[in-house]
Length: 263
Image (cartoon, rainbow, N blue to C red; front, side, top):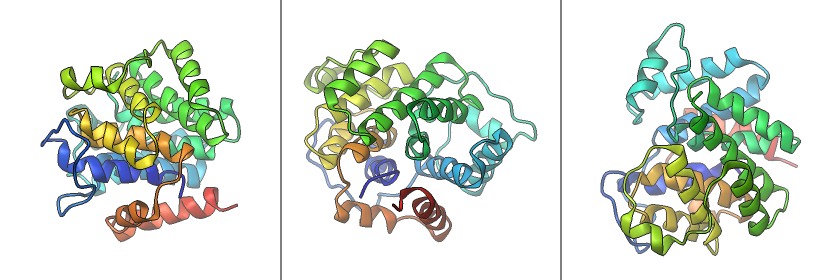
């Protein structure tokens, strides 16, 4: 299975390790503590925006606000909480990886590389209008789009390095010992991409992301979103993740799948 399930499964797998950080790839993928967080909620908010009207900023904001308020304890940052409760929300200059964790639906809807860029920008800028926040979302979306249309890992790496000045030549064995909880896009999105570049398959990508010992659910959501365009998400993983969505989120997921993923 390909698509936004990559971000959702990554989030759910990483969720127990956000506060209980580990530095190993040897861990249970799913447990009683595995559940969706804000990464999944806002990914599906973006998906619902794209289903309803991808040209409307107002529809985008309405979806982000309504989903966030419905799932108010999903684990949002302080600034986003203020934004989601505001009657007239303005972007607040965030550079955090919240823009990248939710962007994957844009890459599956886009009919061109240019549209992927534009949708990613729109999805980020209503909150994360700092250059780092915008670039993190666009870089993630472009990596997904390139993987989706058949680019090689070397081609994806070169494009992201040249356009966004991310150093993707580091190895996870160098990063892991010194890496800690990091929210800034410029210090977490490159690492998530490296988790994909070094991996052998989807599961290996997510294990790489969690093993960094950082913001595990978001790192795994970002890395997993790219991996699920390059590899298939195994049925045993996608099934476990889908089974942990409530009926409302599952309906949104299914509507997106029906509109954009059925060929």
